[in-house]
Image (cartoon, rainbow, N blue to C red; front, side, top):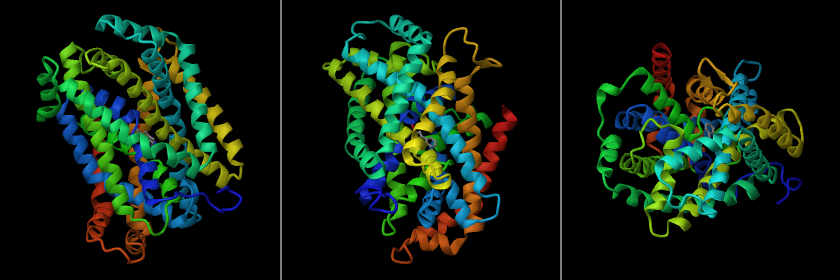
Length: 451
Ligand code: TRP
């Protein structure tokens, strides 16, 4: 259906919203960022804290966003304008839009690499390489700064193309079939990885927690990663919630998305760490952890050539369904609040993101000028968005729902005006009102003090 016939675009089915929200959640955050954070933060202790954050905060924050979006049928800024006119609350939405641009900008650096790795897989260029060569190739690739920027540009405009085609045609279709496929290939990879010689060390690293490793920094990183992975705290789910039908069940949507996202992250851990330990890659190897380990596993597998192509293609698609959600937040804002048409809004955002994002890409070259105080622009953008803006956004969103939006409207929205019975709704509201704000604030402040 074209946009002229319909006042507002929306998801076609229940599965559509779950697929799109899971598509947004599942991405490089699970397969690339999660193992990096886990490796840097001491392994199993981080995994445990991550799971605590997801269970304790993930559902309430996700529900809060969905409720705001569906209630107002509006974008991240517009929603707050409707619910709290003439107040400072719309700033939460503006912050989300800004955060969306920042994440889109550095995320597409890595998303661009997935395109290069598809090419490398197709041309069989990993074949027979040992770890040292693989690592050298990866470093050489970063030093081709402009190649990185070109790949990034390709990824940004690919995202723009899908978003421009609109919610129902673009976003829904891509997610529905391909995410289950990704899950399947991760299971196969996980089995191969866990049966490599010396794999048990990696499994122990992943699953045997050393509680002395839990510090303020680990907590804030776990909080930041959980929000990042679930796409929370910047209005993605306000925007997607606004496309959800009044008859859909928001609680079960939130549960499904969180379950799928967490499953993929844990699976990614099971794929990466046993293999990394087996090959002698340090868990703190950061970017190389995933991009060197995965091709090494495929080298040890029958049918590795084909599987490797499929894997990187699916990784690129998983990244795409995530960047779509980031861009959609900005485009929905520009088109509904500033009345730009969708096409102009999309092109404008993509160009702006490419300009900002190229600094992130170029900052990963050796001797780059784009580093401040020993931190690359890439790392700074990552840290500012995930460890600062998302937690603050999430904090303000739960405070808004718990104290301003109020219990009655929350119950109406979650139970679809009383037609759904949900005994958990009371507990969720309690968490949203008291526990979540307190937990986010404490973790956030303890993280600030330590760092
Ligand atoms: N969640 C995505 C991932 O794990 C990234 C992402 C998409 C995101 N939209 C977001 C992160 C909004 C934070 C906020 O790859």
